[in-house]
Amino acid sequence: MSDLKVVHWKRHGHDRLYVNLPDGTAVAWADRRTGKVTILLELHRREALQMLRPRLVRAEVQPTEVPAPPRTRPRQEEVTRLPELTPADDLALNPPGAALRKLLDESGQTLGQRALDWLLRRQSEWDSWRKGLAGERRVGGELQRLSRSGWRVLHSVPLPRDVDIDHLLIGPGGVFSINTKHHHGKAVWIGDEMARVNHGSPQPYARKSKAEAHRAQKVLERYVSFPLRVEPVIVFVGVTDLAKAATQLTVRVYREREVSALGPLSGVLDPGQVEMVHSVARHRLAWLSA
Image (cartoon, rainbow, N blue to C red):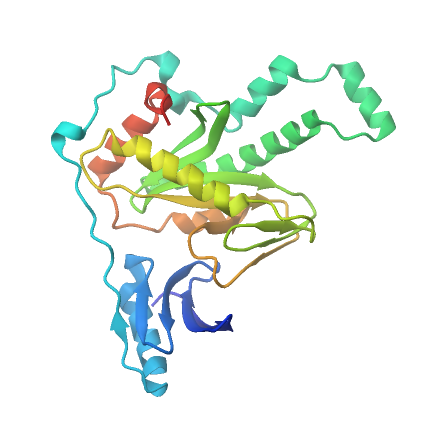
């Protein structure tokens, strides 16, 4: 049995039990008043129900499962075809942080400007880019380790309006859109939509990650003939503390070394589907209308 644990959460009129993985990711939750159980990760369905049922029975509530929403299969005539892949359009050749590296190369500071900023202890936009680049490289290295378990990873996937997906992970456990945040030496709290760094102003990290995953899913669904879901992930680099709200269910949140938790996930895509999704995702032209 996995190292699952049950957490009791009671707030804002709700009384719930959450079954979480060791990293805090929720796999299921139950309403203690109605007995309804919602399964979030099918892989852990049996274990989650075994852990929740005794607690709900003790509360004199008969547990009832909420069925998962039906997954629809795209009609074959709705699947779009891409032209033959060329090296110029092959995103599999992108190293981690490729988009930030390009920004720094094209409009970065001169050595003189960097020296002046250092003397004046002045922060600049280029410092943010360099920090982001370092973070994406570190997370990219961790993700690359998963290739031995049948996973494929892409970096700096370009979207319209000069934005990009930091990393896209494709494998037996599904598809994950990964956003890297580098906050060296700082503490982070993340909730359903917002995050706070060192108790600062709210940042819409979770909201943006969900929107990014939704964009990626819409793109990939155009080119594959089977149901597909893209899950949002945020990876924090260099933080001293990472706290997550109990209600944070829709975005996976990790420290950089914790992304290995994605490796054992399976049962979502078979090897052929992994290769099909990867062949679409690596094609630059697929993302032009994201």
